[in-house]
View 1 (cartoon, one colour):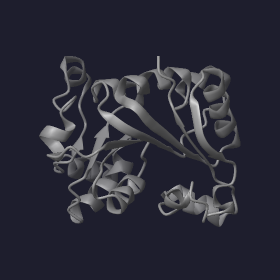
View 2 (tube, rainbow, N blue to C red):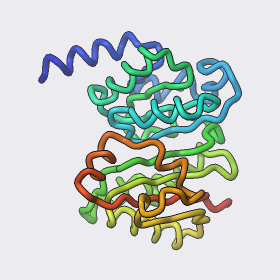
View 3 (cartoon, helix red, strand yellow):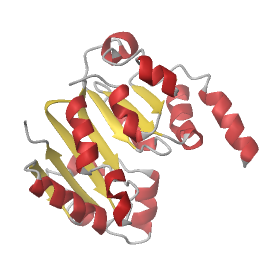
View 4 (cartoon, rainbow, N blue to C red):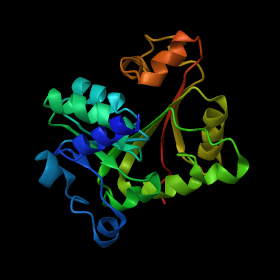
Length: 226
């Protein structure tokens, strides 16, 4: 297993769409911050990021479904991200990138109003009270997203965790954000216009949860303007 990880780390370093900046680079100024469209993608298409992208299959599949948008997967575990990076490299997907960083450093990778949408797919629920701030929809993370998102930008959440889903609804309500849509059972009505595009793409774990009969929750919201 350790040997396989080392092999994947080495291959990640060869991909021109896989970035793993160290703290020194993040502190001094990441080269693509504020320049993703111009210097990397070479277009003015919307930039969508996936927080905690895991294997990266959701990022890649979204890039296939929406070739006129740019997708960037964010995670801290390079061995897992290798799968998405490898697939997108083999398929020559020009609208995909991956960044290996800790989620707390997201503000050092993107400039203000550089991101159009954020996807949060099956994040760790962090059930222990002291770790609430680690949740990807905590007030602390939402403050980070405010700096990245363009005015009117949307945040999507997909989760199998009732705790995380309800927690996010509470945060949205408490802080006055705009809930655009929510459902505690995403696949109860897959023909509904609000979810039709959402159910077309599934993560690796989402498929497993569905096979086990678990209910998938989904919501999307817009941040309150200051």
